[in-house]
Amino acid sequence: MKYIALITGASSGIGREFVYAIDQSMDSIDEIWLVARRKDRLEEVSQRLRHHTRIICGDLAGRITVNRIAAHLKNDKCRVRFLVNAAGYGILGDFDKGDRRDETGMCDINVRALTDLTHVCIPYMSKGSRIINLASSAAFVPQTGFSVYAATKAYVLSFSRSLNSELKVKGIYVTAVCPGPVRTEFFEIAEKNGSKTLSLKKIAMTTPQKVVKCALRDSYNKKEISVPTFIMKMFRIMCKVLPHKAIIAATSMIYK
Ligand SMILES: NC(=O)c1ccc[n+]([C@@H]2O[C@H](COP(=O)([O-])OP(=O)(O)OC[C@H]3O[C@@H](n4cnc5c(N)ncnc54)[C@H](OP(=O)(O)O)[C@@H]3O)[C@@H](O)[C@H]2O)c1
Image 1 (cartoon, protein in one colour):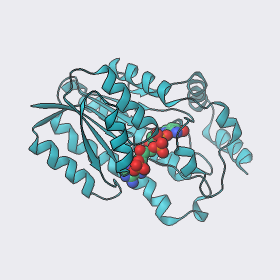
Image 2 (tube, helix red, strand yellow):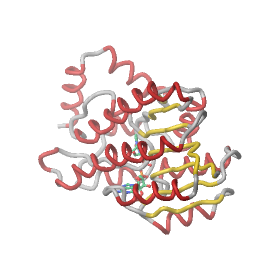
Image 3 (cartoon, protein in one colour):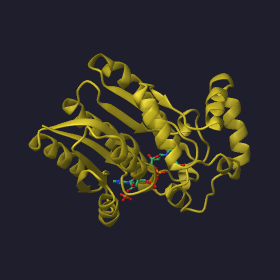
Image 4 (spheres, protein in one colour):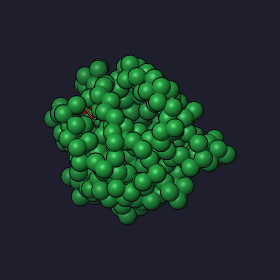
């Protein structure tokens, strides 16, 4: 029996930081599996690790990569101790002006691939296993100019919370991570069509290290939601108490 941690989005940003943190802190696993498209990046990450690794280089937009992971899990008789679904992207701008493939691609990666991989991994999990899903503070309220992205993250938050409730009886816990802006390559892709992130949002920027430290602590403490910074905790409360119509109207005015 081989105990593994499986991390998507392992070539960059928050996913890569999860790899480093799990590599340093978890002696109870035999291998870390790294999933992303950029092979050279995954090899670089792998060289820095104490643990054995398996590099799974592939696009999560189709089903092929998840099918390959399913086959590896079966053939290697694995137990998944940690699944981190960090692969994802967002594109800023008006939906009707955006590229059709970019817009639907967010649903493919942020939603479908995350759901598919989770479904594939659960049979290989047992008491003490953890699932960490990267949602976002964009999940708390619809976002003008980021409509598909915010909707995909609302799905991740909702899915993670109900799955956590379903899996608790098996001793498996799910945590949805909801950071505000994090300093990663995310914004290079998000701003590629010329729309810029609000400078107000960028004031709240945090680091992937802080997000991951908080997420791992919250996951160990069996929390269903992890919000890493004070500002975003306040934003979450605001989204609970104020009418969403008012928040959407206010953010649309700034957006325009
Ligand atoms: N940065 C933020 O401000 C922020 C805030 C809240 C939530 N998040 C969420 O956190 C997660 C990680 O984002 P990040 O900030 O770390 O961004 P990032 O640095 O751009 O990393 C994104 C990762 O996803 C992988 N990925 C993207 N498309 C893929 C595909 N089609 N197939 C396989 N892998 C794919 C990328 O790898 P390859 O390109 O090598 O395939 C990369 O490793 C995302 O789900 C994001 O929505 C980010």
